[in-house]
Image (tube, rainbow, N blue to C red):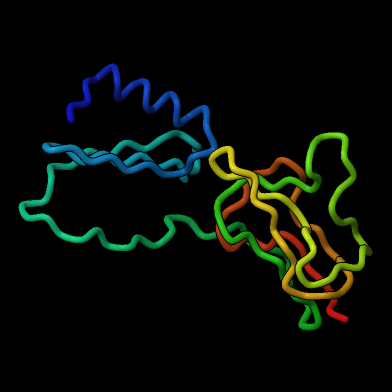
Length: 154
């Protein structure tokens, strides 16, 4: 596989228009990594020569920590993002939100949708109780492990 300068430029432009945070591409004579977790939100391009011998790819740690959440009360359970995605409070624009502040939720109840790569993933609660905090605005990108909501169990 070969990648010319114009194809690289198009790939970077497509990355800039999408929600994709990281892309890795390998060919016979190159390895390309594009990451978008920079403070200036500009894609980062890293091109390296291939390793001398094939080796299994190491698991990389996240390049940025999730945004800090306000202080936690010990009696609350946090609902966190299991992936990098876009957070939606309702199934579609104009529909009511899955949960509101003060809503009672049950185990297995959908509390939001996380969109990743055009796939809509319903996030189900693992706790029953009352929603006391919603920390993310509708349509906002979220990081892996970021606190979305806090629930008072009961």
